[in-house]
Image (cartoon, rainbow, N blue to C red; front, side, top):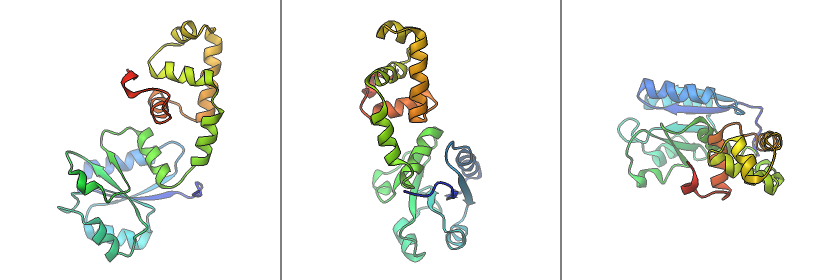
Length: 201
């Protein structure tokens, strides 16, 4: 597992200043992750960045400089271990994306981006599985209700609980999972098969 006290160095390679600075801004605001973004806008700047900063992750538009030959670049710069995320800004040929470790879209929220970076950096998977086990069956029922968009009152009525008990369960769920938004709980519930994506409002 990676050492989370050291900042994660992430190079952002994108020709558009608006997109590049937007991604950088999001990276700086990710909760629970200390990220040091490095912006690059040309191929030469990217090569210099690889040599000077040794980034942990490269987020790059597959159309960077017309077409970015990821395999060729890794070989020429001797950085085969570099984790690479493609930045999706429009319709993209799926075959182009197969060589990347993951993808992020300009429509992804911060929770999704943070999760993908954490997975690539191997931050906390053991902790996640322990926490998932720590959820009681009642807490899992409440997660499903939250994801369905129910209010505390509706959850209390559905599960025959007091509102105070529902609030206590919600507080415990937040503490165990360290997830503070409905969007984050939705992702958690879908990934852990607590709910089918069709049931999400």
